[in-house]
Image (cartoon, rainbow, N blue to C red; front, side, top):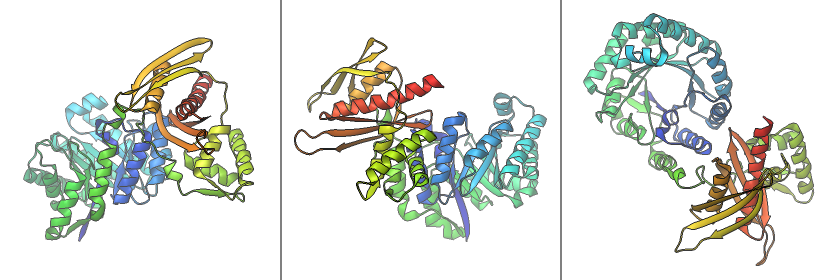
Length: 470
């Protein structure tokens, strides 16, 4: 039985939704658990933020290929490879338009210069990575002789996989099958590489066209795990499960889990972030939930644990965290991920406060929307923000964002009691993400909303301080 590779491109397209950093990592983990053959990401544009995302996905993927396209210059190969090289199965992609219109519009090149660029980029990628994929965009509307030549050039330069894209999606299944046959006949070099396809769903026949391509000899299908205009992962997996035996075809997808996992992915891709500050979801340091340190752990172990929590700290801050860790570890047997996160929020990157809390008024109830009126002090000036929100804390955070004039991704929000009784003190830890880095703040008060506001301001002040120093 021939095993068909199913590569997920949800994170490459992002479905037009502004998924948060944390949601993208969670989506990658779900795909890896589903056992897709590949997880594809968008090209690196912001070197700092996008490289961090690629590195995080590369570390999260235990089984799948992690594929990232390079940009139009050789310099981007080094940047992309540096980000993806730690993946268990890294892949670099060279994605180039094949139709004359797209060549002129996107790459501003004539056919001969396009062939030179493809050869140069593929060769540069192969020098770094053993797995290089050439993606022929809009292949079905290309001039056939040019398409044949482009594929030959890519394979000769070192491509180990070639993908043909039907961007228009106007072919019937039998036409797409004939197209694949034609390419294989005229480009014998395709026999030595993995041949993939990406089918548009413009005529609601993407699944049928993908199966037709497989029967014509294609080895890989690119799909998405939630609603989009290309082949749906769940559809193609269902076809292979129920009718694959008829053609001796199968795939590695865990069919028993696909319904549950795709439902989770669809939930992640919903537009939750449009109405609330909790756009990254609220979790209790979930990635490190099972991590426990003891008094016997040294500076190196604590530093690795801090990295696992997602922080990038200086040597000086790591030393402060380790000193505080030792003080706590001497008094109790174990230190949990939550406690280490609180230590980081308390001692790392302590800065002069740019924004200080003056006053706040919160109104909420079961018959009205929660509202927050917050007054902050900055350089002697009074700044005020008034917002409605999905609960008092959401309203408070939105009011602060209104004052600052900037939205920061809320990576995590923790609440816990530090004393007992009716007048118990509440402690909150807020983790904000800016430019790919995490900043945490800690607040303590008998009023949990007040503690949350102070924690948010603590994290915010660290961001503002670093931005001013940069």
